[in-house]
Length: 103
Image (cartoon, rainbow, N blue to C red):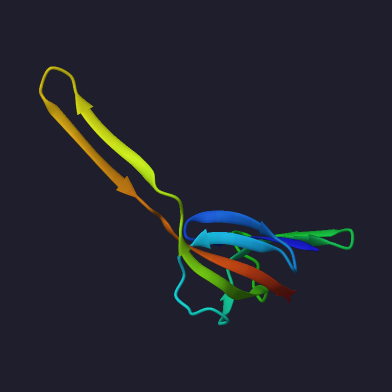
């Protein structure tokens, strides 16, 4: 059984026991998070698709880690204008372990 959930403006395919990296969510390590924007549920030969979400279905997950991704470099440059700006960015993320799909 698997589900497609939406969080942080992105969609993720999740199944029980899987770990997924999502955009940062509030919560400490060990907290339970409930993802209620479930777009699709499939398994046991059945598929349910929401319009846009499925009512009464939720995905329960546990926060495994709060962290920041590897640094990416952002370099802005304008030729012949002596304009150069170099900055970096580290995107925060939350690592979730999916416990169950209910509903």
